[in-house]
Image (cartoon, rainbow, N blue to C red; front, side):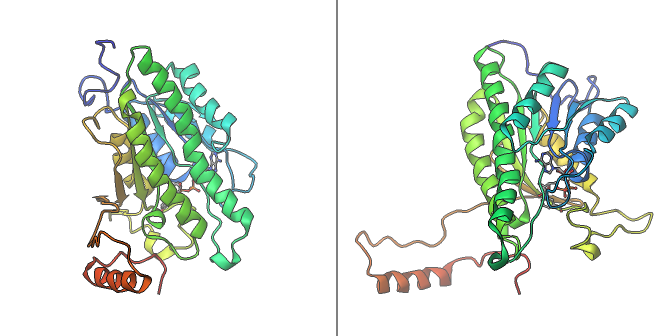
Length: 319
Ligand SMILES: NC(=O)c1ccc[n+]([C@@H]2O[C@H](COP(=O)([O-])OP(=O)(O)OC[C@H]3O[C@@H](n4cnc5c(N)ncnc54)[C@H](O)[C@@H]3O)[C@@H](O)[C@H]2O)c1
């Protein structure tokens, strides 16, 4: 162990020029939407940013250009430092080269923001196996692989006596927390990200890594058509509640050294001016008979327990 304070361990907001001064942050899917807002917000707080984006269509279909270079230009124009990475984060090569881009360009990696993704919405009866696989791949594998490669890097740093103040921010969704009609693949993937977050936080704490997740809501190409009314921008002087930039401040703090002291394994809903800690599955009413139930007896007990249990939040889109 070294006595040196890990980069960004203090609140960093003083002389050092921002909450993330000296930190290197990789954001996946940062060419547009929420990822772009996060990348710009990190740079504004002094971070050097790896801007990843494969540049795909709304359904994951190949598109001609990655918008990552544009975001890099925006960061540089504002006086910040950034580099583009155009790899597919759901591939081993793309995830490994993302971590390598941070280390090779800026000498280190401090924060990983897993954000990239797309949708293939269908009712379950119409959901093709391809649409299931593609959405599970980009969200769930697209979180696991960058996390795995970053974790290997941080474990090696820790074992070499340079325990980092490393941070991971994963991106779940209300669809993962409550379910969403027409989004069986997406809801399952986003719920899987919550489980992955809990395990990663428990496994990686000893190496100086904190892992949290957000469930955001904002106006991006993913939501502006389906939820046009909710997402609409207001008149000039009003608070633009659904701007993606409203989600980024919490993401920046969770990815900074300031989020120390046990801020890990937690899930936050964040939209507009609201931040909510989500309280997850926990035991409700329970009965222990200390011997095996009959099916009918188990049923009677289940009904009695349900009558005493809290009513769960509604599935999005359910009538
Ligand atoms: N917008 C919302 O209200 C909302 C709500 C809940 C969750 N989310 C989640 O937030 C994240 C960002 O969504 P958004 O609304 O900004 O969408 P977006 O479509 O604007 O941005 C997603 C970006 O990810 C990129 N991408 C897709 N697959 C990739 C891959 N394999 N490798 C690298 N980049 C890839 C796309 O090219 C795109 O630029 C997603 O995980 C989404 O599921 C968004």
